[in-house]
Amino acid sequence: MVIMSPKDENELRHMIKTALDYNGGPIAVRYPRSDGVGVTIDQDTFSIPIGSWESLQDGRDAVLLAVGSMVYPSSEAGSLLKRDGFHVEVVNARSVKPLDDTFLTRIANQHKFVVTLEENVLAGGFGSAVIEFFVDHDFQDVRVKRIGLPDRFVEHGAQVLLRGHHGLSPDKIADTVRSFLEHNRATETTKLYE
Image (tube, rainbow, N blue to C red; front, side, top):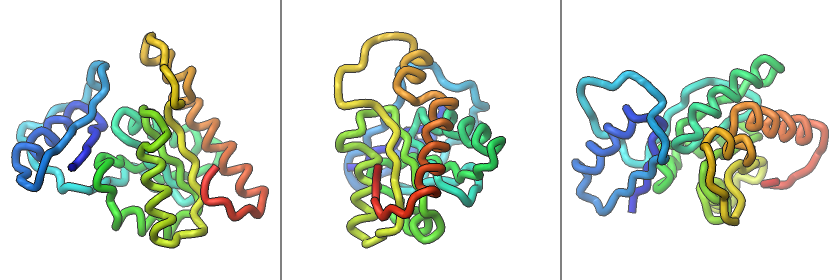
């Protein structure tokens, strides 16, 4: 089964086209309950290669792997971090299953610090799958920090307030990433994840 999560309403249209064109099994497209982000809509739709990600911002200090609704907040967090001298790569991890193995291999060879971001429960989620990939492929030097929702009931409320409360707003993401990088630069630990 293929699971995709669009960063915006334009990419959602391309994912629907992908699902219509795909004959290899079922495709699920996860999208948030909120309005779109207000991007320009392409005139034509095209199929997105199954299992493909895209880099949206270059960086050498760490990589932020953002799923769906976390892509734009992660890009904003990347801009906040840049002001503090941290240059992070921001990736639209639009394919949750399958993962982009080629992209992950490149990341493991180029980056020591990886942060996964998802507006989903962390237990058994995207970040867990990324850690499993690194373990299964013997990438022992990569340190992963997962940012997402706790494994408990999340109260109802305005999405912007809930994101802030659960550490998913751009400023909270930047704070978490900054702390993760500063902590790991100051220690000589060999932990794969935090």
